[in-house]
Structures are given as C-alpha cells and as structure tokens.
Image (cartoon, rainbow, N blue to C red; front, side):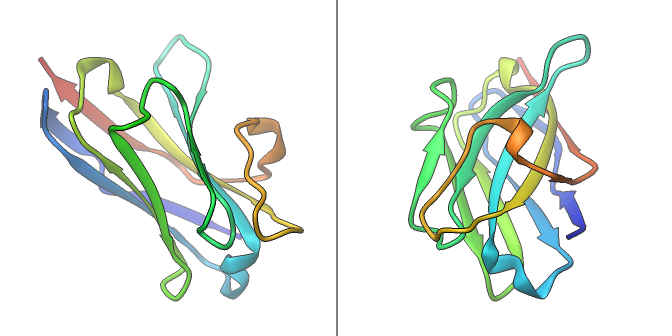
Amino acid sequence: VQLQASGGGLVQTGGSLRISCAASRRAFNTYVMGWFRQVPGKEREFVATISRSGLVTYYADSVKGRFTISRDNAKNTVYLQMNSLKPEDTAVYYCAAFYGRLPYITSQDQNRYDHWGQGTLVTVSS
C-alpha cells in the first residue's frame, strides 16, 4: 500500500491542525495505521495508532488529550487532529501501516509497520 501524507504547515502555539494520510489500496480497512514524528537529529517517535476497525486507539503520553487519530475506511484515509499545539510538536509527521490480522490490534512499535508515507512538516511557532 502506498501512503501520501498531507496537511502540514505553520501554526501558532495553541492552534490546531489536521493532517491526513491517503492510502492507495482498496483493502485499507485491513491495515493498522499509525502516526510517527521525527525532529532532525532525533529518533523517530510514536504519536498515535488506530486499529483497522477504528474502534481502538492509543496515544503517546506527550499528545494524549490533545491529538485525535481517526480513519475513514470508505475514503482510504487516516487523520490526525492536533489541538493545543506546542513548539515541541514541531516535526515531520509520518503515517505508516501494517496488515492487521485482527480487527482490534494496534501497535506503537515502528518496527511492526512495513509501509510508510513520505512525511509532512508541522511547524509550531512560539
């Protein structure tokens, strides 16, 4: 499956932004989806994940209560709604996917993911 992330940009501290990731494959609803982010010079880190059914989500502690991951299987798209943004949220955000054998599994382990998008830059100004 090919993934195309979009929607990044410049936003002020406290603002909101929604980024999207469109998948090329019809069987999108069989894939667990995740969002990761990376700051230059640092390791890529987990942000959020959603089960193939959309019923189970999991977040990094640093974004819990501020970010919401969701998916629209009819549109082959996963979203990350980011609210109350902070300068430390500045990063390149990557969407990723792996085949989910069961409808309720998720993963924060980036090694589980075998499909990656190209990334979209989110910059939060102070």
